[in-house]
Length: 246
Ligand code: NAP
Image (cartoon, rainbow, N blue to C red; front, side, top):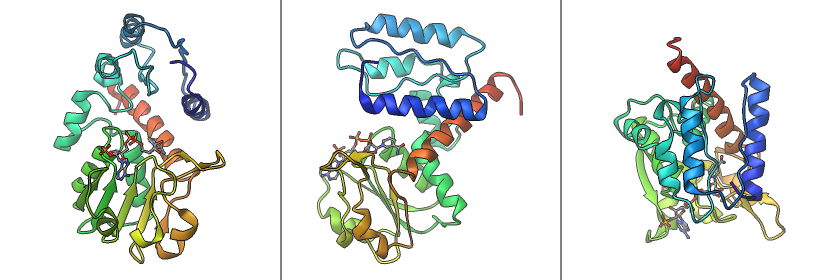
């Protein structure tokens, strides 16, 4: 909705990924002034279509719209972002169909590098519903000892410096400095920020932090592509669930 430049980039990347894996995708680029009712009508139409298995509403929505109501209107079986309350609840219980794309992409990355979570000190900076909170939950499900930091956290640098696995999802360019990182830590940078020159960067001061870490994800090229890959995985799963295919 509207003409948010970051949303445009994200939507284009998702469309490209659909093409690459052979999914049909439809984009509804609605003007900024679209009403709540018009948007809900579109979601309902897509809910009813058998040839649509996944629905994603690119956030943020313009201020006059209620994003919560729009997310809740999506059929949970087609909620490939896993933002619907039904899916969020299932994740809490550890019995889910879909995981939110960014945290699940991070877990996939940890698994593929054989990075053990069990028993580790995991610190997540950020507590948003789409990244921080589910990220903490997934680390907990794998037996990490999890601390969630946010804007009211006291002694944040000290908490971060205890982390074996540090996940930054703050939205502030180069927020995580070298003194906040333990020697040998695994550092996952979820941030997609712009530096003082308008260049894409992460929440971690990569150049000054990288030599202290055992693993660190770059921005761009780290978590972002994993998020999109997970979206494709969720969509395939949704199609299978809706068609009773194992
Ligand atoms: P968000 O909703 O703005 O949440 C940011 C979180 O950071 C909040 O919990 C906030 O705390 C905390 N925070 C802000 N300033 C802080 C400070 N000075 N000290 C400690 N904590 C602070 O952002 P989001 O949607 O989670 O996204 C976070 C970042 O990830 C952004 O850069 C976004 O672009 C990026 N992102 C990337 C992907 C990807 O695929 N790579 C996907 C989604 C998001 P309070 O709760 O106390 O306000």
